[in-house]
Length: 173
Image (cartoon, rainbow, N blue to C red; front, side, top):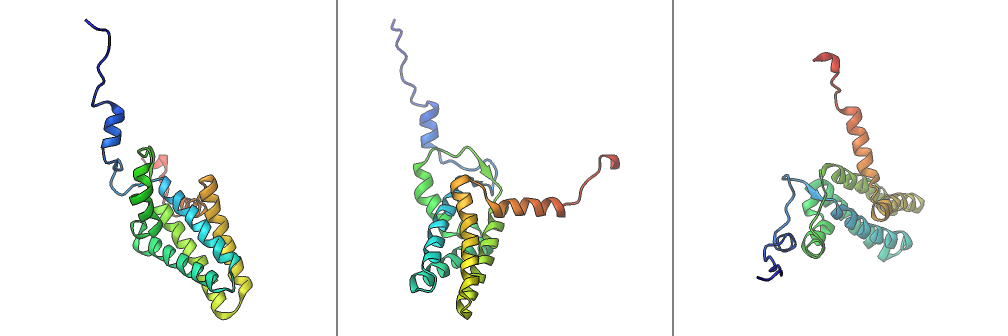
């Protein structure tokens, strides 16, 4: 009798790599997706900021406005950076270990859309300093998320929710 252990073809590692990883609850998203999107947003907004007043800058901010609009209005599943993450990036990563509610990141997309629209309007009417400030603010928020996993828009969403959700008192049992 041998002391060698036969390899188990259904080891945990084999099961994890062969399974399609789905969120534990419907509607939740992989926490890495918004951070990936923030990295691409940072790149596009940096191009827009450096190129303010040029065709490249106008195309970059226009494109990012459309990306924010899709994420905020249609939903994160329609946001191009999320599609790239789900189809190209996530299959190459380890299975997700954390999931999150999409509401805070979707709100962050709406905030980004607001800044992008202000930038677009500033460029359209020729008030370049307003456009620069709006692009820089959106860029700073995107960079915080990409570099430090700190989603400023998500934090604002949670603070607003805390103030708008009715509190239940322990005395009203």
